[in-house]
Image (cartoon, rainbow, N blue to C red):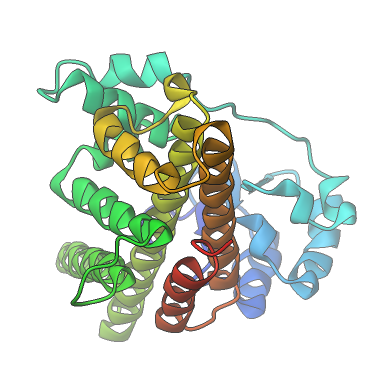
Length: 316
């Protein structure tokens, strides 16, 4: 979504980082909502990731939600509505969007020239998001999966000499952020040449926000893929191969499971140890994802995760 919106009656507010800025919510939604439409019959205000609004912003928005002008539609998008204040949630009409089933995503991707197993894996890893599934089949998406697998390998002691696994994951996210920043800047400069009023500072700020947002998205995706790989390790170790997401890399998963359980104790006890190890590793990855939401240093958070996987999980 372009920022600012290309339509004068649509305001789409996305958080520039981990949280919405209080003043942006006040200026671009609360105060702007009193003005009548410029071109259409309605004005629409969309707040993306609404759960990331601070309590101050949500409380300020309350009166606008309670008594909006008749020409205003307010749409709050949230993947975690439970994090919204009860006073906000109670004044909204919830509309739930279920993810597409795996079969529908596979059908959408069929005929794109990819191996069936890879399409199946991308469909499962995307959680019903067709565009994400398509991205996972791209060169950049395959790279993200490979780096996530490398980070997951830390949990079972497959650490090789050289750069730490987390650095490759961060490099993928940084490259994606740089590409998004460049693409956004070029698009906004084209709009400026076409007559859209934007200052050089506005263009630079919007491009940086887009790059930062894409970098954050790719880093979170990399960690999500890491957790999914560890989840699959637990499933394979428990003998539930059919529920694995990474269908195109079962040989690799089975080899890693063998590394987890080949030492005494063997048999059922060894399999349980493998399941427990993978689950603990996945919990550490998910904990790191939550830490990144708090604007901690990404490098330090990833280095700490790598160390915790290496130190705590194998000895657990």
